Image 1 (cartoon, rainbow, N blue to C red):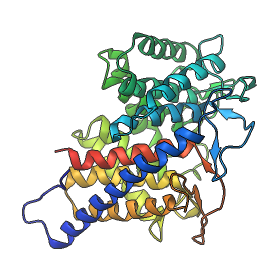
Image 2 (image 1 turned 120 degrees about the horizontal axis):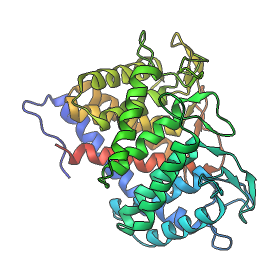
Image 3 (image 1 turned 90 degrees about the vertical axis):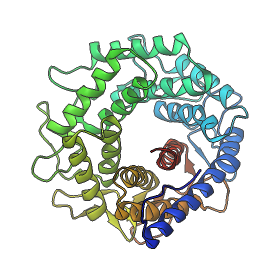
Amino acid sequence: MKPPTYAGMPTGLETSVARVRESLGWLQRWLVNNAYPFWAQHGYDTVQGGFHETLGSDGPVANEPRRARVQLRQIYSFARAADFGWRENASRLVTDGLDYFFKHYRRPDGLFRTLVAPDGTALDDSALLYDQAFVLLALAASHRILGPRAALVQAASSLRVALNEQLKGPGPGFRSGVPAAMPLLANPHMHLLEAALSWTAISDDPAWAALADEIVTLALDRLIDGRTGALFESFDENWLPLAKRGVEPGHQFEWAWLLLCWNRADARVRNAAIRLVEIGETHGVRQGVAINALLEDFSVHEGHARLWQQTERLKAAALLATMTREPRYWSMTEQAVAVLRRYLETGVPGLWYDRLTADGQFVQERSPASSFYHIVCAIGALEAAFEGP
């Protein structure tokens, strides 16, 4: 793997690119040598099946309720393991994870419930749009390690039909779930776009591209504020913002990355994405760390910082760095990857910190499995920045 080379690259930029490349190597080694082996050994319940919610140095907690999204994110993470060179028992974990999920989370109406006990007893039968999006994403990712399978395609197509029948609104986008239809939420649509793009890459079914196009149009026309360029989180039935306190820097970065993945050549998309990154970077980064939430005027609402916000900043920065070749985005990438490494340096290889307080202290708690997906996505995006044109 070679760093990008630019004609007449300034010495400072060359140094920044080299540092990012060194950090990428560190992340790859951490992922393959530490994280995948640790979570494969301790993160799957070999007795009842399914992935554990959290891990500590002493292993899992018995009888923690299991969210659908965690099962699906872990399936996704192990489905991508071979991309980074870790094969071991990844295919078995993906297969067993899918079996457990479809056995215990599927509802009679074709949607998937949100929470079960380790033995599969339903604890919350609600079907949230957020979780359905991750079902689609996990099924697409499973092709990476299991190969093309008609059953995966059929399951995804059936769920897409169920979404259109049960959660589709009268206008653009989808309701938030059954029975929690309101408020309308941006975040599930973001992950639905992520899933649709994943399916577009492996399927010639035009319905996936149409779904991605619909969500991008929704983002540009309704979710993003025409005055400031910020993306809000919750909306009424007409897609008018409800609580403008919900400007999340992490989601500005994440939406920007997805919009550019959809079409980086479209001027409107490109400008909207760059503005989202500008908002996240200018107002949502404090002392080099992406924080949780801003108010409508971009003042700080919640100053603590989750791990996932750092990964989304890294993804957006790395993509813009290779797209634009502007030094500021390489500097942003360098800072973001350095911060991410801090979250992973726990003293227990393979675990991570999830929360950093506003005064700069990591919260000492068990590592949530849900963050593994974000870490895998960030490392993959950084690899793509070096491997792309």
